[in-house]
Length: 478
Image (cartoon, rainbow, N blue to C red):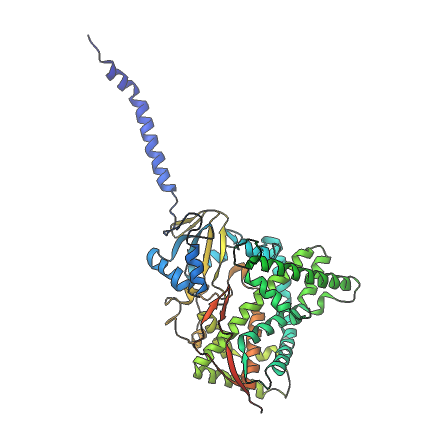
């Protein structure tokens, strides 16, 4: 009988074919189950991505309005892009802020542009993780604890009063923003660190700031090149100061308990906890963190007061009441600042509308699963202040100036001008004191008004009033 060998072969191989087929189906199912779903969005051009759109919006101080918000409308509150060569996921919302910021060291780590790291210093606290980060925060936290702040308040008062007496008295017009920059710079150096401010120091630090977010390309004349040269000058100056301080402490001429942060840092260096470079890099970072951000916060507080006379009237009464309980020439105390509740509401609302920082970058140290999406290991994550500050979900009528909204409890991680989580700004309390004390002495000593009420706010790289916020002043005691 004739037998078709093809049928024999088919039936012989059928079990093997079945095994292979079902194995394929099982593998396909597993692959579909494990497939990573990336956030929606456009990556833009190769390598460059959407960097130009990002920086163009930043220069116009429209980063949220022109870059983030249109992409939220198109892709949702979590979207992917490519910025400065890095694939980046932008997250928005209090829940996303909490998830990213509270998982520092676990899922993400701080990730700043190369230019920022080189200029601030690779050994500063923003580049440190785990034990070294905790140690440095502990040193700063001890200095800015209640006892430290109690010592700082009269020092800040003396600095503000001296500056106003020597630079505002007898003047008809002053630059409010320039005044805040000079004052906050002096307070950080002299009151917090115990370092005398020499002529030209502020200008040198300003040159460094100009290059913090610029491309890290060192060709003569570029912002980064100028910034690196200024950084070398600062480092040389600080090395001399630190070594002198160390010598005094080793010879028992000075104690770490003198209330100065630099003394505590140098003590850590003597004990072998940190290096000389770590001391210098953290001083540099602290000056920038406490200087420019506080300056714009003060300037925006006055801008809002000028535009809202009813708020100004209420704030002024708060300070008159405090002044009436002081002897002539007596400094404020930390207890006095606790009675400036409405002033702090005004300042907080000003920082909500005009956050000193846009947000900050993190880097995923593992694949992150969030809301059904995957942020791959190695990708950058950008959280933003505007994503919640301007959101009706967290702040009713968000574009209106309403200090009273801070009488109510604000959802955690919705109000984030100082960041959050383990990297919450260590100088938060110092910034608060600077704002409250400066406002007190200006409003109780001077009548003032803005010369350019509609003055634009520019970014380079942090926000600032484009004309320096000139104000006309007249003394209340002449």
